[in-house]
Length: 206
Image 1: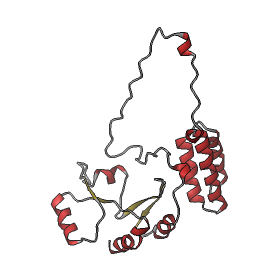
Image 2 (image 1 turned 90 degrees about the vertical axis):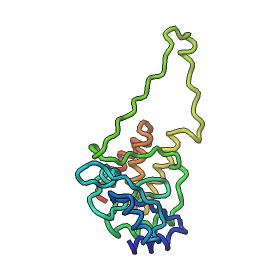
Image 3 (image 1 turned 90 degrees about the horizontal axis):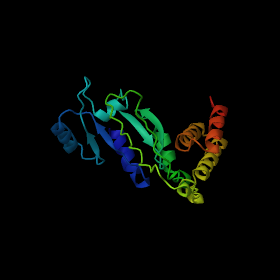
Image 4 (image 1 turned 45 degrees about the vertical axis):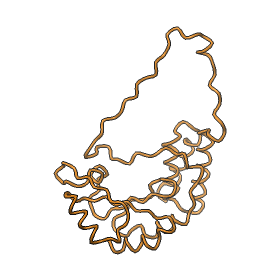
């Protein structure tokens, strides 16, 4: 924790944010601990579960088995690495020196929860939109207007693919893999997504 506090103090002005997930079972114990460690100024999430381990429900859903475990997220909101202990110090400093990528600003979030989380929420089933049985033929045949270029998924996917290729040129393969996977997840029906699958195979093992 002293190391985390020092890193926060050194890098917060550059954009580093921290959110703590407490595994305390008694809220007052957490409050007492924070009152004795006032340098921990970042938010602390409290939420014990009813599982045998009785850790925070989020920690159990994300299968955290060691403390500290860090989920490191970049300026684009993309998960870059999961690290235990101090394993991500250099990567965090490098990520802070990078600007957010406008091409990824509207990327859909990627679900990080494991296939069988400790606590599973019931999925929300969207009700189908009502349809008119006697809809006029002209209305049924009306074409959908094309999306503006700025909002075109194919254009966004292509820009993101070009960014991923630039990371490959710089031999930053882990970052490139993250970008490529995000393209496949966010824009699966675009030509760039198909290209991303091919590129992922090309850099496999690098």
